[in-house]
Amino acid sequence: MQLDRDQQLKLFTRMLRIRKFEEALIAHNPVGHLSIGQEGTIAGACMALRDDDFVTGTHRSHGHPIGKGADINPLMAEIFGKRTGICKGLGGSMHLTDTSMGLIGESAIVGGGLPLATGAGLSIQVRGADQVSLCFFGDGATNQGTFGESVNMAAIWKLPVIYFCENNGYAVTTSVEKSHGQPDIYRRADGYGIPGVVVDGQDAEAVHAVTLEAVNRARSGEGPTLIEAKTYRFDEHSNRLAIPIEYRSKEEVEHYRNERDPITLYRNVLLSRDLRVDVERIEEQVNNAVDEAVEFAKQSPEPEMSDLWDCLFSNPIAPAGDKGLPE
Image (cartoon, rainbow, N blue to C red):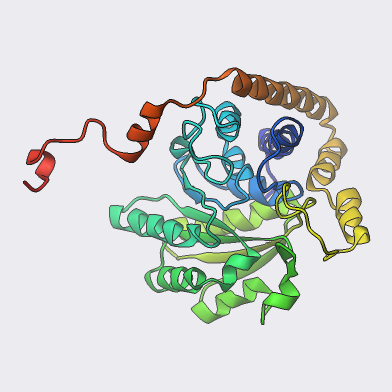
């Protein structure tokens, strides 16, 4: 099912917001694990969700809240370490969240979001709600115990969870072929009796289509799906990480940059549908919005010592005996 005009433009907007947001980080405050090159997987998947559906992200975390539709001002301020940040500047680049958009957490721990997303799926089932939970994770996380434990539990109880693997081909410098006995990650679904789907992660509409099918399946009570999106990160594992070895060829990187850039590919699709005026308007709007977010972050105040208390404890702490606490 092809997206309608407004949905197509929203998808392009979210992809471009991720790209321009991270390019601004490189220019103004270079920190973090960038998802440049993976925008199609993120925005395509998130566009299949409702605002009240849950999402868990990864250490490569800037794109996930933006893909879900979060305001970029507090996200930018968070990475700048400012008090107006989504976590008051205390979480930083790898711990972005926005509970108003269903983003329940991101973690620097590889595979850390898998049990959280599964728990969210259990909560949905217990409450009798019709939400779903989508878990982003990388190819390296599928070798963690939390992957098998989480997927198995969701399969047995038919939890409404979509396990979405952003397979960018490398865990830091180690290729999937060298670290996985079964490099086709989607085929691991067979061991749990659930559907496994592989999709071109550089094709945002294709990602949306397979994710929407999995979402509809989960929402109707049929249980989880494992999606493997074949994608690629253009930059290093971390943009502050100096890699002393050549673990991938320059030709490979240039191929993806020049021929498989998801934003260029989708822009060309929209131009072929006579949406040039809309595309150029969005490009201007996104550039302005990111510039404003940078300025907002720069002008925002630093965190205060009192924020540490508020982020660690319920303030004020209830006296003994109140709210059922033990004496």
